[in-house]
Length: 394
Image (cartoon, rainbow, N blue to C red):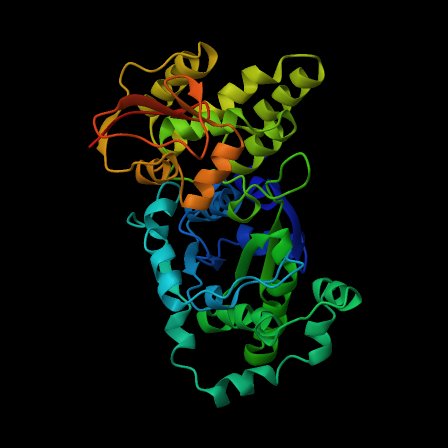
């Protein structure tokens, strides 16, 4: 399998209008302009985003013009894809705060500075300049029937649930991104197919241009839920190496092969061999360790991967406290506040959730939300299997 064939098949579900036409363009030597959009509805890119980022990386390595689009306007509206209820509406300030580290996180996979750098764009570049009359003119190119036929909207209607106008307009806004950037190809998860196909129709109507659409398989867990920020099982790209390794080791065995295919550059022949060995009775744990090591290496470096593997063996398998444990003086006088202060929880509600799950220990003993501390107390705080810190209360 050559590089173009792998580009068009690895992790790919569908190509519109068809694979053969896109392959012909790519084999002609023409360099195309493509993009994927990322709405900053949260502060972190996670491994659920990696399938798209890895596909962009493949195109970049072959010399094509890749655009990393940050949907700072569309994020304020909220993509209804996969949602049975409306998303929370975010302010522009919240979106900008979420987006501030997106390029840095994506740079773990994409090259923003080399000979063929990925270009970063924000869709506020065109939407902030657009008047209401100009937007109304765009709506002329798509019909109510075309957008309302979306399965999601039909399901809401059957369930007597509202579809808000901002949700209804979202596909049109995403569609216009392709027009504004004069795109040849849009890449995205298969849950984005409707929005991307709207873009294909819009650019055809407005520019008489045929845009290609490539849908990718989603990285999902054993229950079919996306591994991502909105499903509660986030594994962020900028996680500490030890945490990243440990979280990969907690993934269900069923997703090992899919992870190798979608979010690594391991040779497909080797992935097929791994698949056959697991089917033949080999312990999946061995290959999950290989996966965790490869992801830490790719997102950080070889030394970080070795250190994370050693940490996992010491802390998780041997259940010991690491020797190089971080020490910190803290102000918090309650366990809930302490978990937030040391970064083990993102909020008080998150801290209470960890405590309810009995995931927090003080000097090896489980604790509860009622735990409080006195000035001068010192102890080892542990959250889950991987997070340790020695604290002293001021």
